[in-house]
Amino acid sequence: MKMIMAVIKPFKLEEVREALTPLGIEGMTVSEVKGFGRQKGQAEIYRGAEYQVNFLPKVKIEIACVDDLVEQVVETVQKTAMTGKIGDGKIFVYALDKAVRIRTGETNAEAL
Image 1 (spheres, rainbow, N blue to C red):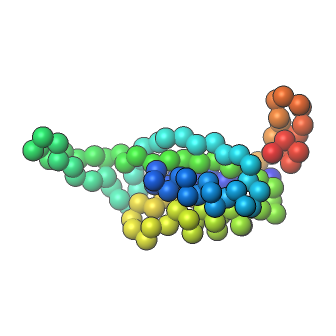
Image 2 (cartoon, rainbow, N blue to C red):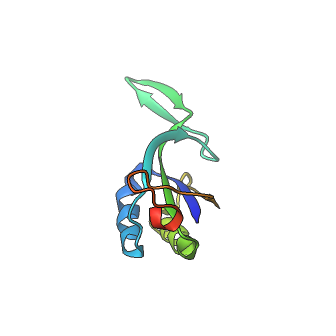
Image 3 (cartoon, one colour):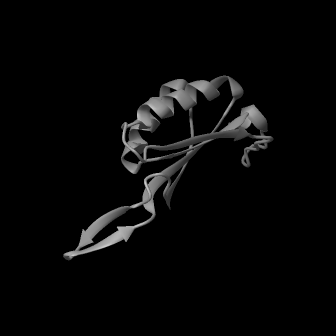
């Protein structure tokens, strides 16, 4: 099993969710986050005064899946979340040692 974490632009969230459904992804965790990378923030104007926004709003999605689906999920998220502009985000994949469904006690792949 693997945990896939992707940080994407907020307006791409629904499109990514819809693209993952046909792959059999039945759940994900979504968090509103702020951050910066090469984008380094941006200048905005509020009431005529310019100020620097150093942390930009992003959405972090976390998806636990079986090893067989990892490449498909990563490819789908990348293609769907891409705008071609700086700040599209990142995808991270890491090992998931154990999963437990609290309600039933099912473990690992059955718990997903």
